[in-house]
Image (cartoon, rainbow, N blue to C red; front, side, top):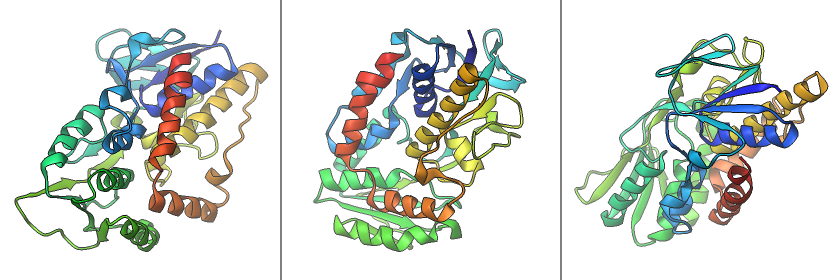
Length: 315
């Protein structure tokens, strides 16, 4: 039986394991230093009041078909992962899904941090999201939409102090969409006031574990045979925004690649049409739609229900 080592118990790592085990029978080891998986895509639902924050946390002790290795991954050596506190784990395949390194003053990308921030939002008169890094982080606008929907009397605005040229095509359609729900988007610094909550949107950088890795855009395999990189770090290395939907797509691609090689002896994948690297304009149109409209909370609720009753429950 093939052994697959997955580094990272976030959205990408968990969804990869789910899709892989749908296609083949394999031994899967999940290296994750936290005791629980967090469904971070669903955080806007908690801001919108559709679920409780605690509902987004899934204890890894509930896993039955895969083994949780409760440790930190330090380095990659071939198809072996060196751990901080225990012996190396090696596999026939290694899938790195370590997430990304984030720099900012509001930890809304974790369930616990998002809940702390929500308590501050409750008492603030105005909430200002400030994007000032060279590469804007994607995803915060869905939280801004959810906050404005739940607290319509509060002032909610986004201030793009700097936006790289790669993202300028999103700015005007985003401003128009945000205005429909009463959310202001400007390219000016926000006003200063004591009764306002200023949220510095964190920048993302590739995870240190991904340093030096090249990623093939079609199969996500690195320069090392049977070693793959998916999730935020892979998206950043490919020049794509680090959004959860991109991580799900990548997890699906790699699961197909490994499952087909195990069962058929060769790699075969069928990428989603919107993600095709051969049509960057099609991807840009999809990205514009996704980033300006956001994901309706009812859609997130549907995905969450699938995640809780099918994806995580099957592992």
